Amino acid sequence: MRLTPKQIETILSAARIVFGQETEVWLFGSRADDTPRGGDIDLLIHPAHPADGQTLARKIRFLGLLERDLGERKIDIMPGDQRPIVQIAHETGVKL
View 1 (cartoon, helix red, strand yellow):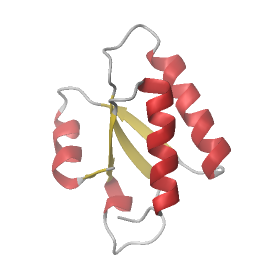
View 2: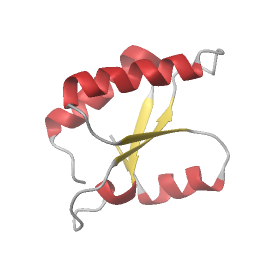
View 3: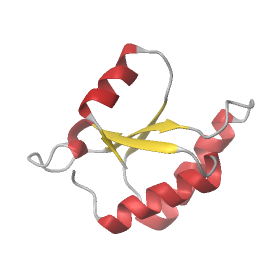
């Protein structure tokens, strides 16, 4: 996994502030693999609480916290649901 311990802590802290303390976060895509270089940060979010109609507002707040603390970088967020891509993210990703 190509994230520093500080980056992991920052991501988890922001996710828990925005989505709840029991939120699970998975890193998947190129950053989950130690061999490549570069790449965006792909995150799968399993919120502690079901969607409450504030999904977009929470996503924006989460990305704002990450930009403030990690700097400007490409971050993709995917909600945990039943799509096949979510299953692939679980199989190939790393739980933070």
